Length: 241
Image (tube, rainbow, N blue to C red; front, side, top):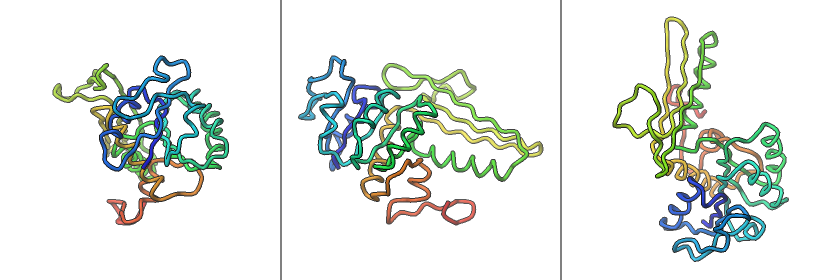
């Protein structure tokens, strides 16, 4: 699978590059960085290619593109891609509602999987949280997110009452209080590599299932439309979500 990485010099992007280069069956097809970056033209470590600006790299022969850049770069690349059918995984955070609407327009030409958290299990937690919201309609609910990042890519423990030996990078908590019943869901991510691994799983799903053009969530990709040969069942009812 030939993969292009957008934001290749960023914290998650650089880990994607490392993982692709060290994984059999994966090939690094392009490394896209901002046009003003000092890394443009510089060789990628042991990759046999150089860092390129988007306008020079978009024509690379890729099976899928993974984008962990900035909202501005993400939107510019989509406009540059025009009607090309190449699938995209988008992990860029900070997109506005207007930008998401524009992504849906671009997704008429190609399938995209978009999420602000590609770490394994995040889509399952979101799905369970949605089920709880429907099952406990009168409950008070709250979603809390904590994130701290060290320069080495390990997220530092936020100021929470969690064990000191946990090097937690990202915590998402869902709290439900229905009076006589309280439910708390916690999803913890310990390294940025978890986001890279999840994005690669989404890329494989796009390439292996070849879905219709559209903007997909992780839940839609892995729970509603799983890769052929796999099963993803609702633990509570035994029925597909």
